[in-house]
Image (cartoon, rainbow, N blue to C red; front, top):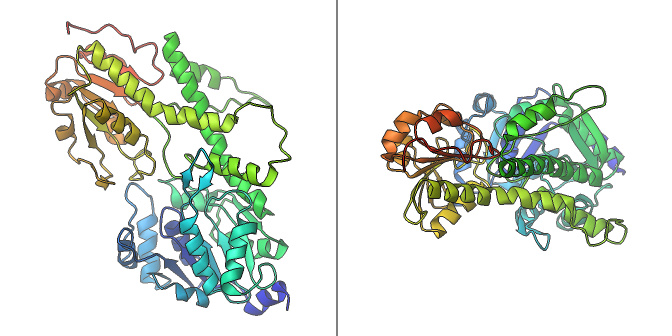
Length: 478
């Protein structure tokens, strides 16, 4: 019996499983569960010491994701109450399903050697393979190295199940395209890239995703093309950020305001003209942008090593962009050193208040936060570094304080690392009094404050891209 016949015999997709209850898996599962097209959704989560708590939380209708995530908890409560969603650690339930998706992180063990850590993904694939039955659909949503779906993912599934992909079960890659803070909206409204290993798999995966799309549409392609699409769109965003970050560094050196330059460039509009400029900042974090460039680089090394025509001896433009963005926390450290020196203080023994540990504004997502290497540099230099974040309570042993006044009290320097809205209306007079310093330092890594206002109150100011202000006259004697 052909795969098409097996799928026809099974009928429409009604029961779905989502492996991995994180920033991608949770919103995907509740949207599937909320669709009238589907009868039931299992969320699969390992009952581990680090993440097993999610199971009970989700089954109570409580989201383990903190920060501002519009509509997610309300929709979760709705599908739990309707008995259309259940989180479980029992992977044998996969055998009851028509389709299973995998949303598991894929970090890198070694970026220089292009070695990804696929251990968690491989375990998820093995679990799915053990319980596969003829006519099922398996979809990888994780961002992976181009070629992964048709190579080791396919091979693992076939080994564990004894079935053959494309003959006994459907297999596809449909990469997530979400941003923390707008997870539900992104899944509904963004076009969905769907790449099957064959036409039947692509069609079955399209059937899975179409019911949850509102504005978005399905864009079909091959599995490998879908993998290249996902890794490239993040690589391009990282490249755009690196371009504006490098311009910010140039503007600082030349004594001009990068935001004025950006506004001027952005004003050039018209037919056939695009100058898509993002915003500079203290660094790039998150799970995706910090590693997807390396997945793309690894893909071309594996799939096209002997075919790539590229200038001999020249480094990859994409990897260079990654290095520029990785440098920004170090630049923030340099700004801090310069500002402390201007204020007549040494970094040794200085108390520094780091405002924001999450990498993304108004979020609790701390994955690969650029604040971490900055804090490491401070501590190595002998400074005392206190961290405040209204959304993050703890992260890998780093103490996160919830009271902003406690963090800024007695501080020699206040450093804005995240664009949380709580930092937009900082009162310079109050902070100066709280710090107890005649000339406290303030470093703005997200363009959150008015430099002139703080300079007027005696602060030593430094900001990303603010060459027009970074060497300002200090009002009053140090």
